[in-house]
Amino acid sequence: MKLPRFLQFKGYLVKDFKEYISEGRIEIHLEVKENRRRCCSRCNAELTGYVGQHRMKIEGLPISGLRQIIYFWRVKGYCQNCKKHRSERIDFLSELTPHFTKDYAWWLGRFCEFAPVSRVADFNQQSKMTMWRLDFARMRKMLQKYKIPKVRRISVDEVYAQNRRKRGQSRDDQFFTVITDLETRRVIYVTDSRRKEALDTFFKIIGKDACGKIDVVACDQHDAYAASVREYCKNATLVWDRFHIMQNFEIAVNETRKELHGQLYRDDDAKHLSRGKYRYIFLKKADRRTKAEEIHMQEVIAANREFSALEIIKERMLTFFDERDEWSAEKIFREVGTWIYDMNFYSLKKWYDSLSKQWDTLKNYFRYRVTSAVSEGHNNVIKMLKRRAFGYRNMEYFKLKIMQVCGYLNSKYINSLESLTFDC
View 1 (cartoon, rainbow, N blue to C red):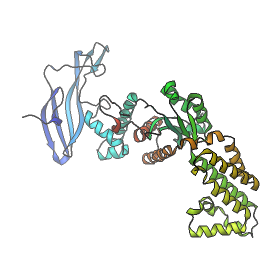
View 2: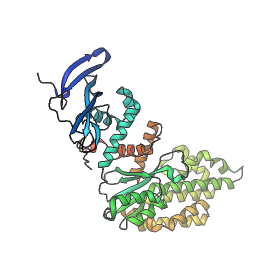
View 3: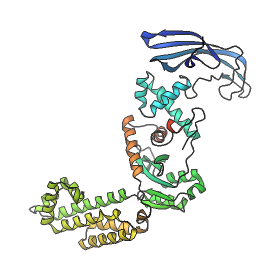
View 4: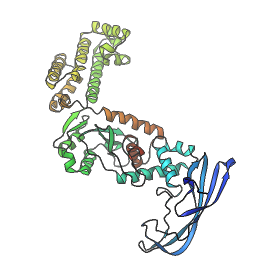
């Protein structure tokens, strides 16, 4: 009688098969085939000089809901190549862990791609530390074969990685720099800190030729990233993300609201209507306000001329990124600047002066129309990973986990378990 495939083990014969239904497991006892060639587990050279053997107990893929426990003897011999005593190579034993077969280790690894390690361990009745080590070893093996795909347009953003600083670290060291391919929308690299050196590392890895083929780099207004792009990507155009520009504008508008609120007398009607609890009404676009919010703003504008000017400036600036070309956008930008200076709004003047000095970079958005919105989406996924794991102590594991979930270090992009060939 021919045994089914899941009961066939290369180099071994099934000697005994026992079922323990009440305990939810089956036991398979193996014996070695005659004249089996024994090879070193490290270099695959033939072993000579038998020096002993030890009994192995490993687990394979469950069969009909029953845990599969496999017993066999593993021989130890002398390897002429390593010049040491080595255990023999077992073809069906996982290289990632000595506790599982290859197919079971791969199956558990796929579980870890979309579920927390602790949940995978509980579901499969395994040790949490064993599952963590398996997942870590699997991702590190994938990383050894990983090659950064060729890119033309990338997005660069930072994500908050750790709460506590180690001795000698600055706040910049608490972040990861995440590089995303804008065309495939996948994370292609993660590196420590948000310093200039972090992005320099990525550009050095891909090489000078690959850097020369990058056309666009989308990022926020972080000076370190801009300096790195200008040094290594001579042909690339730096594009500021519109979300961060408008976020800084809203901060300046809110600061101006605070300034105007502080200048009002207690008995002024606008004093009550411009309190901090109403700040979101001031920042919201006019056509998105509710009826009650519209009435609120009408009362504020009627009571104070400066709040009326602030509302006009905000509404005009919200149309800035909707323009078709840089010349129309520049007209709006200069117009807003004139109104800010006429009203002498300190916080808005500071914001405007900072942007007007770098208009040559700001206008690039209207040529390429790219943003780092994809990176912001990945940041939300990364925050979810942190919450799901209740934080990470091992930063290397955290970086690999980001590339597993948001990038290419997962079974979706691997054609073969053995060769770990990536289809990027």
